[in-house]
Image 1 (tube, one colour):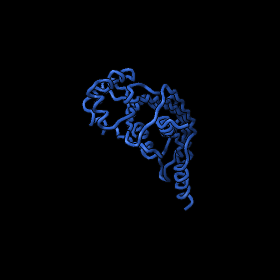
Image 2 (cartoon, one colour):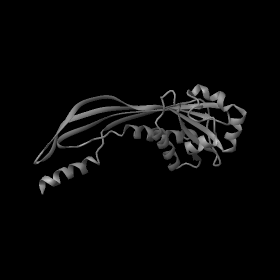
Image 3 (cartoon, one colour):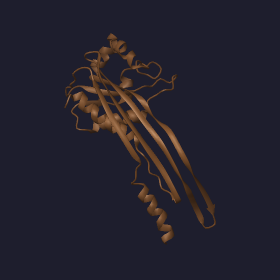
Image 4 (spheres, rainbow, N blue to C red):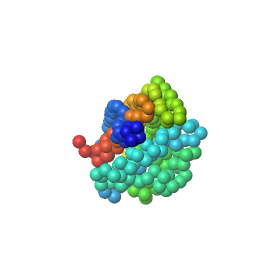
Length: 221
């Protein structure tokens, strides 16, 4: 009975453990901000299929979801709903690839009118990614008539680096930038049963950026 309970206890214990994560957030403000109850924002990521350098959809969704669920009194339009409403300007094949392409785009009369119609005040453009920067160790598993067992130690480091450019559609200019960086080490020691300690790097970067974006847009201290 004890031999069966030990692996189960280790798995349950691992489910509550995380690796070490350090996160930083920085802000550069270029103009005053503020938003009315009737106005909304949209969070977009770079999507340019031929280029292949896209910001992960789950990070964009995470930021939008946390902003929607936080103590805000402004609307957050889902990215896909915005893309559909603004067809064809923000489709993957026609969307701007660089933030410096946005000023000219949002000054297009037809586009500016459409943005006004759907009530978008701020466009938040996020660029960046999470990547594996290092990994060491290994785990070997064997299967015998008495059961299976794994031995070894595996670790890896992930780095998240994202930058959000906030564009005031009403004024037609970039009002500031927020960068969110997180780094963490995950590891899996294995003595019979692997026990993972996963660093939630991307989640940490998302939480930091979302919190700061809300404060920035509402111009709170």
